[in-house]
Length: 243
Image (cartoon, rainbow, N blue to C red; front, side, top):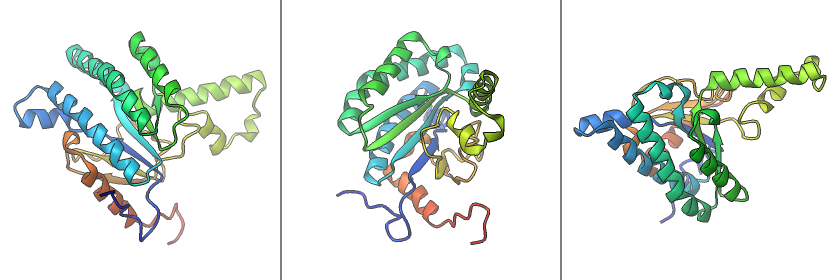
């Protein structure tokens, strides 16, 4: 049976959902397993969540896969995460393509291994024409670095005379971000019970609704997503105005 959008009565489902996937390590520790086991099971949660997002009419899904700060983790864990990423890109692209998923990646690719960058480039080109959903994966991503990069790109344009500084507003600035062609998230979900954004989509989430769930990421599924979307539907989005 197809999933029914929990927003069907009150309003449309959120157009863009962003998720901070947290709790892999705690999930593994609770089971006496190494942290890498949590990361491997987290990949299954990604698969479930993408399918659930498509079923519920979500047009954009952004997943925080690997932050710029995650490079500070133990080298063995970073290597395992990179290997998992290689496996995901090799094994999942064909199925995602069949499902009509368009893949996008944001973050600092210069720090990623060259073979992974090549796989990312291929995945983006191969799925560019799909329109069931846009899956954005943030890798080696940090929002402060993204904002700083946007400011530098604008400054360079101003120095060349390509951009009038008096004409710069919020919309122009947003176009220089890595998500310049992607709508801002309506809903940001963080798993594991932590209640912070952790340098994720700081500019873009200015008016997003935030939902924090105690569910650890490897346990996240279609019901978890629907519960978060249902909570979103009960919110009144006023954007600073009076309701």
